[in-house]
Image (cartoon, rainbow, N blue to C red; front, side):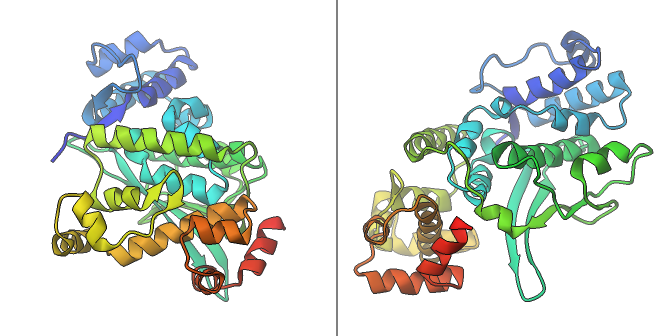
Amino acid sequence: MFEQTVSGFWLKGILASAQAQGIDQESVMAKAGVVSLPQSANERVPLDATVNIWNAAIELTQDPLFGFHMGRQFRPNWFHLIHHLWANSPTVQQAIETTLKYQALISDGGDLSLQHQDNSMSNKAVIEYQPRAAKLAFSYHQIDAVLAILVSLIRWSVDDGFTPTKISVPHQQPEVVEELESFFNCPIEFNSPQTLIEFDAVWLDFPLIGADSDLLNMHLQLADQKLAELGRVNLSAQVISKLSVLGQFQNLSKEAVAEQLQTSARTLQRKLQQEGTSFKELSDSLRKSLADQYIAQNRSTSDLVELLDFSEISSLHKACKRWFGMSLQEKRKRKEN
């Protein structure tokens, strides 16, 4: 099991928030028992040392909403490489999904997931956050910071008017809650069994202004390299990497990918099952994700057939119906609206 660590840029965000309240970083570090900070994004700090910094900052500031205030002061460049991946993703959904894939570059302290709940009653999207502590327990401040940052990221990307429909947190309601309500501008469920941001799924299709597919592909390759260096690349991620080269789908067989990964097709399938997926599911999911990206970029139908490696146009149309529950033409119209 690898040691859980956190990017140095994340720590600097905590210290910057304390400094904004008149507490210098030396005082926080001394109280936390941390001698020095990483000087680059490539350097990491053990997760428990990060928890100590959180606790020291909270105690010194005496701020009951310290984590929330830290999240509100968030700046995209705190996330370094993740910032570039987000900014150059074509849609909000792509930005969120890419961030989920590479979240370990920021911290090993939690897992994020995205679910799309589309039914006759509602069309909602939900981002769930599950803290993953090492030896020291997390405080509610860390959870509040993550939620405030995620909402800020979406607002920064597309529209300051983005408003969740509900926020759910596992901790008790603090005495001072007006700031939280004003910022999120939606009902907040306290003492919840889950940590969630719920919002209208229409936001998932919003395009990111200034997104550049070439820059995205360049940073994706760098992110894959950084994950590998951290030892955080699971088998599913390795398979996806083999199936996608510079954003173009590679219709490789399970046997061909297994050979590239220096294993057998049977072993590959067994290990993917242990990760809760299969080669077929990964291949289809990647194709769907790339299709969504290309449609957002207004790529022609012939480009889609080529880039997604379909044998004929009819196969593409059938896949769109299966993936999105609508025709390619209807999907394009929805992106335009």
